[in-house]
Length: 299
Image 1 (cartoon, rainbow, N blue to C red):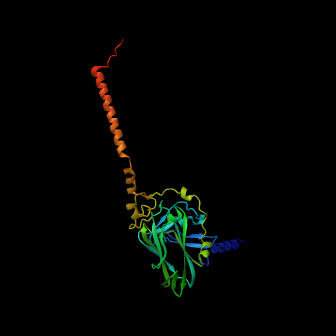
Image 2 (image 1 turned 135 degrees about the horizontal axis):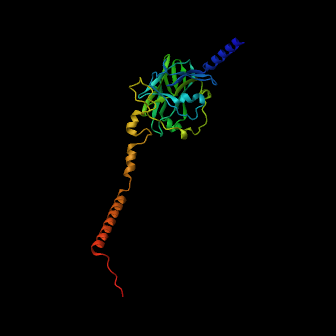
Image 3 (image 1 turned 90 degrees about the vertical axis):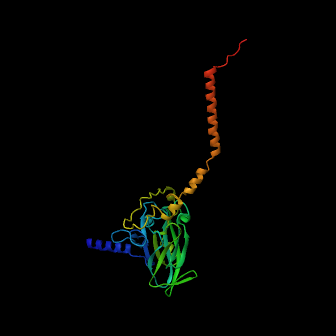
């Protein structure tokens, strides 16, 4: 009886971690292995054998509740890869057919649009996402997916009007563009259309996590001791913090403009008026002391 239970448990466990037949590639960028037992999807780990950061880029792990992400997927959207320059992942080229690439993101640093804007290319040649501003399309602390349909035809990657020859592998490249550093939380390649991919990437309705999301401690994410050449994204997102102000995206120039808007002239008149009144009172006291008050004549 015990033997039967043990075998049944092993079979259940194997079934739970077996990859969905439509999934070609799945990785939890910058994080550990994640298994969705309901949908049968395994997001492979992006860490090395010691659980530390592995190339490409550097990793961040943000303990912030991510809105729209089911419980199983919280860690998927809380972990990420970013780099101070462009970086990419190598993906095996699948058989001929139609596919959908699901790029998974959440903005956990910027609190305004325009803080982070980057592009995504396939094999560093085919433009698939341009000027992505995660905050602008989803907000802060909210799960967001970009879905890209393409086909493989006779060793060619076809996206829209663009045909690009590929070998046994191709790359998914996150390209530094208008602002800050490119990033990604997870990558999922599914055989089929966007509809097929959406069935494997359910997100919940938008709630209130954005309003309740805690402020980021910019010193919290220096978690890559062996990545000394990279400034940590949250200590801060290097290129823009020097020009855009503090970690909340406030601009020093805007602060200076606010100070210059103080009504200086009325303040000066008020000071002068107060000074004049004081002088008059001093003169009155002097007259009293030297001459006394005038006596009133009586009839």
